[in-house]
Image (cartoon, rainbow, N blue to C red):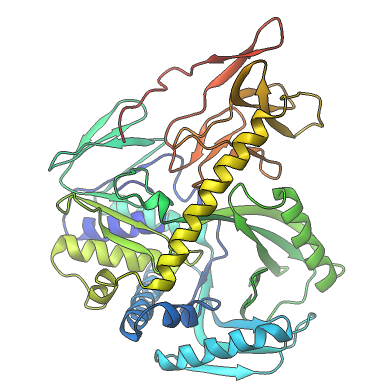
Length: 484
């Protein structure tokens, strides 16, 4: 298993219970990325997802998606009950924040009913902000995702599985029985590999060209009125709300989603979310803020299954589009079931789906945007000289001397070659999280160039300043990790 998030740990547990010898390799620590940083909502009502599915797929495919998510959520609920992981039953609510969102909410109600869900319609809700309509599905639930992944990890090890943290996988061989190689040149021979990373670290299936990486933000508040359920707005500027039980109760407000490395500066996204929360909940006190990253497929259904042309020995699971708890378990059930020879019946329509014109257009549009962004960012970096004369905690990307290749400089003096080690995109400084973000496929790097998340697996090249002030490359030891 590559990745110790919900999918990797659930699949590892299911296979370990069946007697398989399982090793989980995690680049950071258990639950360090999306699995430990999400809102903790487990629901089959997922914003306006159901109506979008019916618009892009046959009803049989949309129904299979719902059935898979229901089974994933049911498995997760049983696991929580069996292992004393706290969870709270809640209604899931998709609401219209303005009158122009009412048709989308109405379409979601029709889709939910058509796909067999018991949904209800409300014209208002008791909230401090305007709600013009809402669709509700009862008996969903919420939990603490960090508590969940830690208990999952304990169960994997209790059933004989092994977990290696701080083990970044950089390559998998082409052999029938793959060899997995880590950053420190350790090799692991195996019969099956499951890539349960946010974005696959191998380019062989071209998933990087099918996925779109999104970041979004979460703020925690005390002293706010708690909503009656897990709420999410229907518009493009999404607002997500849920409570965190405790003394005092905490309100989570999420939103500000955008494609990684694009749009207005990240800190401005956070401030816009803060401004909305201050208007809706005056007097509430912010206690924490953080962000998460997830990936959206081109047709709204996750990519789960065998990596193409690999004879069934490498599996992939990605593209949950911010609904990774039910979808992550759903993917684990599909992959482990297939490996053990008992794939669930609802998996077949999902595996055999074809790309329809609407989804094909979306895929083309995404890749045209990637190409246009790549050119625009490179030109911008080449036409300005990088400077260190800017405020603390900020960074700059530009040309150093006569070398046209972009250089990134952080105010504290750290310099890197601002070129993504995945496919060469020009990076942007993320002022909210102090990272270098790639606007092409979502790779992120720390201020010193270390990889934060993929699809990149190699760090940035660090730079050193010459006496004339020009930056020169200073390769990091072990920078070359072979083919992908």
